[in-house]
Amino acid sequence: MTDLYIYYQVREENAAALRDIITALQTRLGAQHGVAAQLKRRPESKDGLQTWMEIYTATTAGFGASLDAAVRAAGVAELTAGARHSEVFTDLTPCA
Picture 1: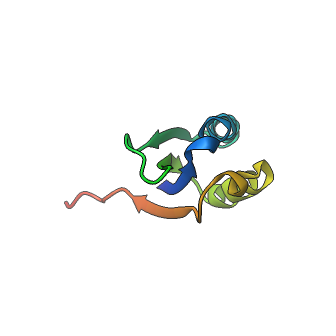
Picture 2 (picture 1 turned 90 degrees about the vertical axis):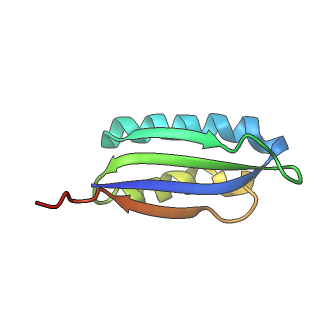
Picture 3 (picture 1 turned 90 degrees about the horizontal axis):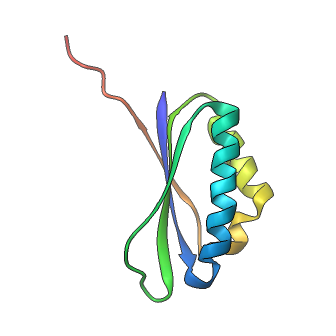
């Protein structure tokens, strides 16, 4: 299983609207795919921009495509400043 970390910037004036959209999206995807989701942001803003991070833990194959489709359908790109950046992490296998 993998964990997804997606970060991007949000204009301060779009923050409230986007928070509602992402929260609903995460609730829906969590129920459909059985993943735990978190939404975080850096505490400071810079030049009117906030940096946000979505975290999805223990995702399975195909989740990324479902997430991308949900983000497109929700119109997230219209409320962010620039691209969404994704990072994928897997658990380390303990050495015997």
